[in-house]
Amino acid sequence: MSFRSIRGTAAAALALAAGLGMAASAQAAEKYKIFLSMSYIGNDWQAEAANMVKAMAAHKSMVDKVDLQVQVAGPNAQRQIQQINAMVQSGAQAIVIFPISPTALNQVVKNACDKGVKIFAYDGEITEPCAHNISIDQEEAGRVTAEWLVDKLGGKGNIIAITGVPGTSVDTLRTKAAKEVFAKHPDIKIVAEAVGMWS
Image (cartoon, rainbow, N blue to C red; front, side, top):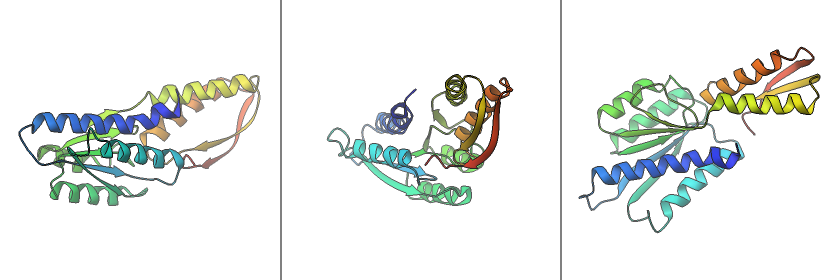
């Protein structure tokens, strides 16, 4: 697994959103209106994900077909909900989302789907069934990296656990899987934990 593959989920979500939208409204001459709804962006990989999606929308193959608008809610589920509502009201045809929570956005996502808006969550997941989730196996990512660390430490040592953005499915699943690996090695001790926001 590479960080490139993780960031690529945002670009894949945009490609799917644009593809489905253009197929659904092939006869329309106007651009397909897509929003990128980002939550916390205070780390390099989210900035790179946003830049990748913006570059893709500006590429000659898409620039005449896609009107991309980007909004950032920060680590605030209520603000992301309000922004998504506004996106739908302004005529969004698809919304690509990095969700701050797997469940908090369910009602606003359901309302958007009911109005015909396509919803694509990248990397983090949304549990509302109408959302399309595009992500890697986050538990496997947590397990593999924890096993690598155990191996590098020879099965013993004191570690500090630096987690990601609290509340996201990515952080929850990776942290859970990593701790399950560490629990199998009694000589590995988590002596402290801190929220790192993936910085």
